[in-house]
Amino acid sequence: MVKISFEKLNSLFEKISEKYDLFVPTKKNDGQSYFEKWEQGKTVSDDLNTVRSAKDFFFPQHEDIVSFKLDGKNIEITDERREVRPFVMFGVRACDVRSFSILDKVFLSEPVDTFYKAKREKGIVISLACQKPSETCFCTTFGIDPTEPEGDIRAWKGNDCYYLEGVTEKGNALLSELSLEECDRTEVDAQIENTKKILDRLPLGKLDTDSFGGDKLKELFDSEKWASLSESCLGCGTCTFVCPTCQCYDIKDFETGHGVKRYRCWDSCMYSDFTKMAHGNPRLTQLERFRQRFMHKLVYFPANNSGEFGCVGCGRCLNKCPISMNIVKVMKTLKGEN
Amino acid sequence: MIEEVLIPKLGVVTDIRIDTPDVKTFRVVAPDGKKVFEHIPGQCAMLSIPGVGEAMFSITSSPTNTEFMEFSIKKCGCLTDWLHHMEVGQQVTIRGPYGNGFPVDTVFKGKNLLFIAGGIGLAPLRSVINYVRHYRDSYGTIDIVYGSRSMDDLVDYKEIINEWCVEEGVNVHLTIDREQEGWDGHVGFVPNYVKELGFDTNKTVIICGPPIMIKFTLAGLSELGFDKTQVFTTMELKMKCGVGKCGRCNIGSKYVCKDGPVFRCDELDELPNEY
Image (tube, rainbow over all chains, first blue to last red; front, side, top):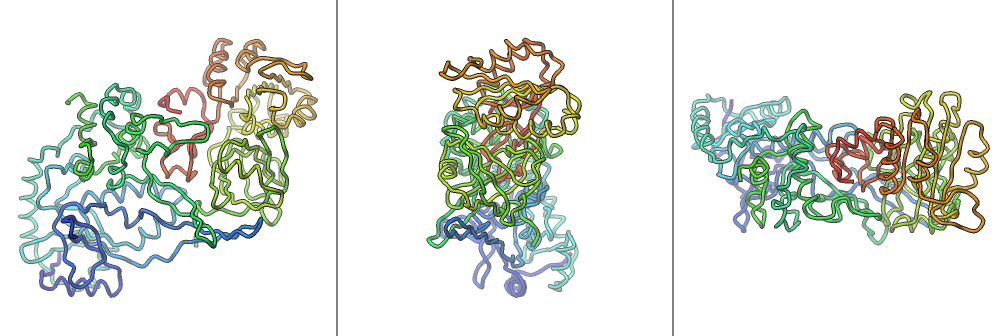
């Protein structure tokens, strides 16, 4: 384990920035935190969640796939993939780090999504342990340990320094470039112990997941409770946009004036045209669309991925849904607790 | 750089055949004149006109055709409308093949086959029919029940009459919804016709058509004693990526683009009724 004092943090970031694009969570004027490219004067926010999850780094809201030039009956195709500059993300929370391995299962399974893979290979994740998990946090429900997050390097914020520990080869390589001061784990261990006490008392920390999973398809799909659960859903899609594991996308063409750009962008199963075809729509009302989102996370994804749920308990949907509907309420209601 | 599935290849339309008032069949090859890629019967491809749209279509030609691929496409939306207005020589973009296809070399081998199609639903089955006709000795009897609204709506009527109907061991049963001048064949809906024909259950059934036709035909087949494990169908839902990642063509935990589009009917029963 190594450490870096708060006073020296800027010089460390400067050093990292020489070789990498460095992104850190910073507070904006709206009082909320966002990942932004680090530059002198930017400080690391202590907020638990950034407004938008860290999935943006590997699966941006939109990206160009290919472009076309049209000339009479002829089409010219140009690959729009670009070299990705190596980058470092500092301060990614345990929930968001776990979301990467969930997204990996989608994008790195055959046939590999080369856009995603290129970014994944060039990105180094420095995670940051949580000290004050909030009441909307429930990552522990899904077996995530926020006191010892995954990542290439994991970090803890101490009283006057950050502690860093290499986890992967990529992480250790970066740490060795930075030649930081060796230290012991005393403060880190004390912090972990303290955080664990808070985690034990979290209201949503130990949700029962036994009623969900790939083998519960029919009974959950046919539940009468979807009607009341989805009744007030506005279909705004906010939950899917802030969700670190939502990865549905659309492919669209854009006429640039001198050709056509084909890009992909985030889409949402909450939208009515998501499944709309010329001959009809299999998900006609918000009930079907709402059900799809939660069935995907709690049943379909586990069915295809050895039981792993498609939720990391970050709590963003709990904070952002305009009608205060969220996966926790859905789980509790389907189980008969609400 | 390694290949990216979302980046399409070029295709050239070398022939356009008018099949019905709203169905045309497009012949597509690569710019070098060869086939763009190989496929198995029942697989699909993404065709696109940049700036207009990209959509999934079943490959209607058989893989035994070594020269080109064909797509029978019904005019029913933005992209298909554009395709119907294009001329020979037009380039399109194409990627694929996608999906599992029919088990022509395993389950179907040696079996008596009963094809049931309605309207444009013949498009994905034509690939299988012409494949099994090519390897005739590997399969038992072939029955084809095909129905459409009118005589003019039978897709590629010429091939049906000139090739299928005259082939030994291939029994073609055509029907149209309403009486029509010049038609002396059967009149009536496909599900009833299947029941009237009263097939022996020693057959594997391959069915495609409008959902309502499939629903009633399945009921009819069940009355005749067919088991759902004997019946295969091919599905269609909205698709964007074609490889199970964009998230929209799922029925329960199965993606139609990747785990389908071909399903055995008892497998469909295990999935939620959302298609």
